[in-house]
Length: 273
Image (tube, rainbow, N blue to C red; front, side, top):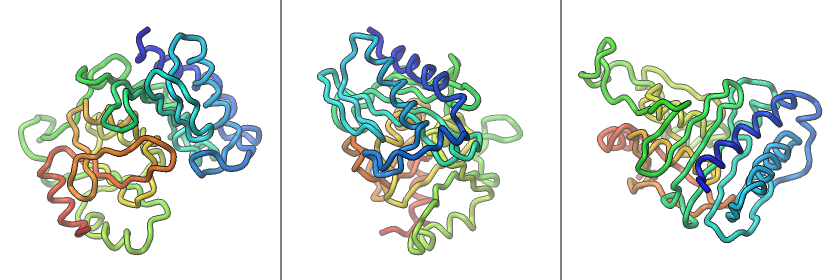
């Protein structure tokens, strides 16, 4: 049993089962509040079922932690599932959403050892296993720390691009982040944290920041490993390396950055202390 292959199969099955529901009235039907606290839509439930059905076809019996289903007990580690990340985009047929799956040996982010994320629009499959690097469709990916006219030899001083999640951010949070927004050459916010972190892991962004204290560990468990295996760093706002208990009730703030120096520069601008 190779767990990373099971996760890949589950991601592909989610894409097959949801492709005709995205943006439709049927797919957008609401079914109350899921375990993660958000409204569950038909497409979310179908996506989770696709993952669970894939798992049931194998001898793999992890404890499943999902946005909609909550916790399904097992005895072989933990499967952390965000079957549709970017549900608002999906509900409006905005082409940026994904399925995010991670396997952890213990009940914490730092215990994630396998991860897959599939771009449900493009079909791109990101994956990683601990100490084996990060990959996109079979090709190794990594952050890009230096660039100068296409040559990796000079710090990217004058062309910084930072991803930000500011959805529903309070006035206080916006005040904290305003200096970064004003200093950055470019900012982006696409609406699906896991997939945006994959873009960071590919070198498209120089940092990705979410300091709202709203993101769930289930939202970023897979991206956590992919970022780390791509060479990136993940920090809490206090400066410690990011870690947290897994579960739909755990809420996080984090900064994904190229290195420690970038974190120090950004945290000074955030003046969070």
